[in-house]
Each structure stands twice: as structure tokens, then as C-alpha cells.
Amino acid sequence: MGLRFRIFLGMMAVVLCALMATGYVAYRYGVDAEATYNAQRLLRKEAALQRSLSYMLERMGGTVGQDSLAVVFTDRICELADVHSLTFSLYDNQGRLVTTSAGPGSPDSTVALSLNQGVLASATQGEGRTEIPNVRGGTEVVWPLRTGSGEVLALGHVHYDPRLAEEADWKAFLLRLAPVYALLFLLVGLLGFSLSNSIVGPLRRLSSDMQSNPLQRGQSKTLTYRWRDEIGSLVTSYNDLLAQLEESMNVRASLEREGAWREMAQQVAHEIKNPLTPLKLGAQHLDRAWRDGAPDFEARLQRYTQTTTQQIDALSDIAEGFAMLATDGKSEMSRMGLNRLLQDVVYLHESSGVELELPAEEVVVFADRTRLMRAFNNLVQNALESGPGRDVEVKVRLTCEKGQATIEVRDNGDGIAEARLERIFEPKFTTKTHGLGLGLAMVRAIVKSSGGRLDVSSELGKGTAFVVVLPQVDQTKG
Image (tube, rainbow, N blue to C red; front, side, top):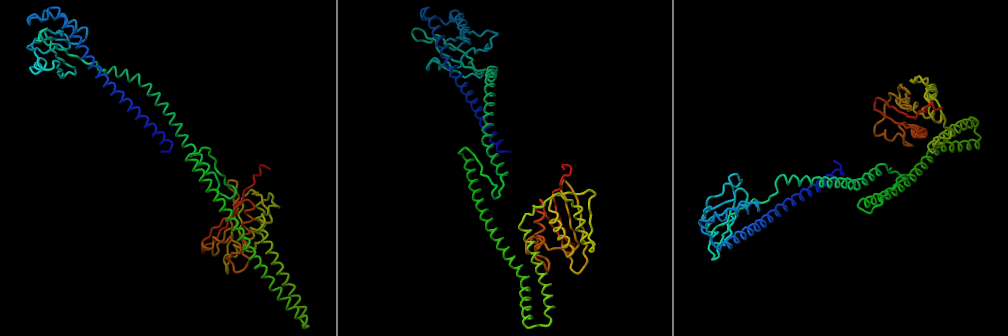
């Protein structure tokens, strides 16, 4: 579950809880308001009934006989019950039913024929007004009707059904409220989606910029963010770390360059010193023979000349090898066919039985032919010398796939140990007892200048395989 969805879901959950809480509070408020309204309404109705009956009693002289109660008050009681929408009954001062507005078909036709003695005593001797709990959910109230002298003439009884919100009313209320809640929910959903995007969007862009930003010297770029918030602080910290990394990489590159130049200088001095030493000794011996008048001076001079020529050739090879390592060699780059070049390389080692496997069509690459030929000569020569004291089988194979030319030089020599395999491309490192140790470093430099790569795999006792991968030139584009 993504961060944006969690934020959005959390906001919607909070809003939903808020709406539900608001609905519950509205419901409770309606119920409480309804109860208050019903209580006040009942008091108003009771007061109106009492005034009406008291007025009738005053008109009749302030007293009526118990036997005349039904005749005097029945019509008035029914009239008042219809006006106030309630059930109105009249009991004598002994609690016996005299008359009632509840007819045979009335919902409240089960009016008690007599009042409970406790209710009767409370109404006649207590505060007067007495509420009776009603199991049917309504309210029953009994109060005394007194004569002018204060005696209890009769007892009025009211059964009142409170005006509670019925199920249909609540459904209508909810139907009116539902569109409002739906609109609020939709608006909050849109707002939540927008807010979650505003939070997660910059984080995603920041993550994308970090992933696409190369942590390489001179190529890393600082990130930009315009808001001064927590994400802005994160971007600032990232840019500071990037600047520190750039500085560290510059320092490291400088140290590596200095170390490389020192190592190169030491190696050049060492390699030049080797040929110069026999030249110096030979010149000293030749000078002594000249001064001593040695009879074999001419023979010594001829041997010295041959030795000097060999050492000069060695110095030339050293200079050429270091030059290939130090230059990019792109001055003579051109389109060239690999098939013909590999045939020429194998022809030079024809006596060694090197096998060659080529595709039917010519494979064209863009490279320096002279340098590339020297690189493959070096690989084949190394393969032939990989098993000292025995004949080594060497196979050169050229294949093409997905716009790349792959040249594999494989032998069944002694192989190279894994620990030494990691260093074979370093200058001055060699697995032989002779040579300068520049061969494979030079080969890799030549392949790299041609836009390719050089890989190696080896297994002790089974042989080694060098694989050169070069980009193939599309001949259909001219």
C-alpha cells in the first residue's frame, strides 16, 4: 500500500468518522429537543383543559353533584379531546370512571374503569398533578378538579401520545441529508486526493531525480525544490551530501592521477634501465679492447652492434607500448572488416595450428585496423604460451548478435588462478617469466578506444577465454 493511498485513506476515514459523529449528535439533539417539546406541550394542553373545566364549573355555581358529572361534562370532554388530539377521561372523587372521549373504536378504548388507589391518594392529597408510567410509550396525567370551596369534585385523566419522530420522518430526514453528506464526502475526497498528491508528488519527483542523477564526478546535479518545508530540508541535505561527495571524488581522482603518474614514471625508468645497462657495459668493454689493441676488436664491435640494435628495438617496443596506453588511438579509426583481419592474425600463427571460425557474411566495425590487429596478435600469442612445455589448442571464433560483434579467443592451457585473474589487466603485471607486463593492459586500451569491452574467464587446468565485444556497423546505412 503506497504512501499516497495511506494518506488518502486516513483522511477519508477521519472525515467519515466526523460525518457519522455529526449525524449521531444531530439525532441525539433531535430526540432531546423532541422530549422537551412534548413535555412543554403536555403542560400547555393540561393547563388549557383545566381552565376550560374550571370555567364550566364556575358557570354552574362552583359545584356539581357526583351523579350529574357525566351529564354536565361528557360533551365538553369529547370536544376538548378532539381539539387537543388526546384521550380525556373524567373520574369521580372515588376514582371511578365517569366519562371518557375514548369510544369503542378508539385506539385508547381500554381506559381503566377505576384509578389505582396510590394514584388516587397522590392526586387528591398530594401536590395534585400526578404522572402515571404507561407501558405503551405515552404519558398519563391525573389532576383534581376542585369546587369553589377547595373540595375535590372529580379527577381529570389525560392519555397523551408524544409527537415522536416516526420512522418515515427519519427516512425523509436522511434522504434530505444524504445528498449533502455525499457532496461533502466527494469534496473531501477530492481535497484528500489533492493533498496526498501535494505530499507524495514531490517525494516521487525527488526519488526519480535521485535515481536518475549519476553519482559521477562532474555529472551530478543538485536538486531544486521551491518550498521551505520538510521535503525542502531533505533536498538541502541531499545537495550538501552531493557537494561533499563531489569534493571527495575530486580529491580521490587527483590522488589517483598522482599515483598513476608516479607508478608510470617508476615503470618507465625501470624498463629503460634494463636495455641501457648492457649498452653501457658493452661500450666500456669495447673501449678497453680498443685501447688494449685486442686482436678480436672487429668481432667485438660487430657483436656490440648487434646487441645495440636489439636493445634499441626493445626500447622502441617499450615506447610504443606506453604510447598506446597513454593515447586514445582514434586518429586512424575507420570502417573495417573483422573477418579479413582475423584471417590475417591466424595466418601469422599458421604453424601453431590456430583454428578460426567465421560467419558467412563480413562483419564490419569502426576501429584502428593496425592497433586492433596488434591486440588480437597479443591475445593469440598469450593463448599459445598458456601451457609451457606442451602444445596448446587455440580457437578464435567470431559471432554477431543484436548489433554486436563478439570475438572469443579460447585455449586449453594451464588457466589463471582467480586471485591473479583480477590483476591481469594492470600494467606491469604478467603471468610469464619474461615481457613487460603491458600486453593485456594495451589490449584493453585498444578495445576500449574502439567502443568495446574485454572480458576474461578462466579455470585452472582447463584453459582461458578472452572475449572482445565491439559495436557492429550497420552496413545498410552506408
